[in-house]
Image (cartoon, rainbow, N blue to C red; front, side, top):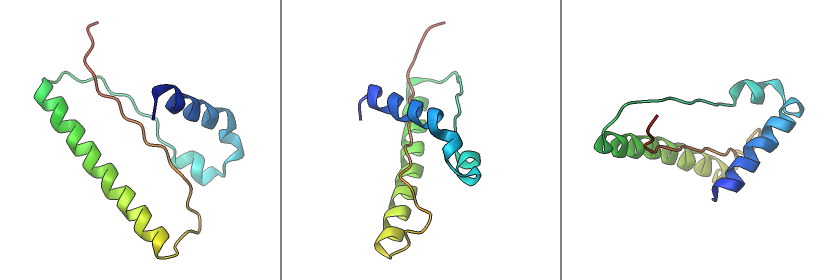
Length: 86
């Protein structure tokens, strides 16, 4: 998914968040961390985050296939990890 589409999805949520039930608004996540890592540490962090996301993706897919669709919504997970110089 291109960054523009990701950004538009998040901006749309922000514009429409009051239309979502309180349980969804309180479950939504927005986090930013600035870390000092080596390239290898960033690679490992990315692998770990991908493994967690893949595990939850598989959980949701299995639940849907089993007919457990009540209360399920599409959820966008976005993660960026890149070097920068301040």
